[in-house]
Length: 331
Image 1 (cartoon, rainbow, N blue to C red):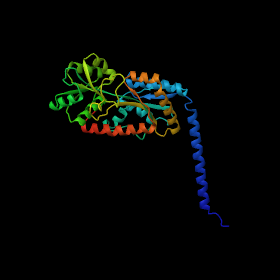
Image 2: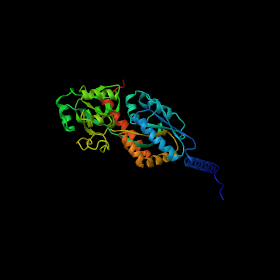
Image 3: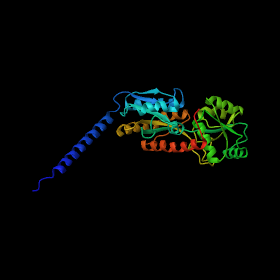
């Protein structure tokens, strides 16, 4: 009998030890996921308290706590359009006990900031989307446009004469208007405001003619006849404004809804990601949650981690292109 080759034997033992170690790590990870969470979870919300993103985060934090048996404590860390809160989570331990609630500004920021303190894709693990908030293309009541087609016609006949308002440079309302200009070939000029309320006031008075606010911000004025809603950016009509056409129904391929969802630090065990995602999917199905989310002007949506990761990446490309073409800059 030939003597075994010593090098091959040592290699075999090393491979065996690696396999056993990997199996042990996997088993420990699965066991940890089955008992997760064993202590309260910190949910960093990278926006100030009181806004729509914060209100949505609190709905899901409460329901996650009920579903998983531990509190999900909301920690508002607003500032820099969400960058401050996101940096905290990017540098947190990847153990599932620090999560981040983000809005679509997360995908916009890389195009606006010349230098980011983290990698928007590589430093996070997507868990799942929970809502999509459409914007309503809204015009001054005196503007003689009763449809999207008529607005485009008026804008083309008066290049540079119409203005659109937003809540500030780089905001979803600003980039939605810039995308509309690009898609339709019109030139409606951007006027940034420091607050949505002041922008809507000037829209009603006619100082600006166009705006892209959320449904909850503008519907009372549309219903009162003070403004006109021409089209909504969602893929389906809003339950709050079922008489307003989607852009697709109005004849234009255009998508600019904002979204919200959960991410974790990169390298968080997949079993934990999947456990939180499964809970979120069930929460979104709840009639109570759906009613509360719709009441905030959003559409409840569930996704897989992979789907949400793809949305974040695709929106980075989409808005990065809009920012570059429009020359959008932060105040």
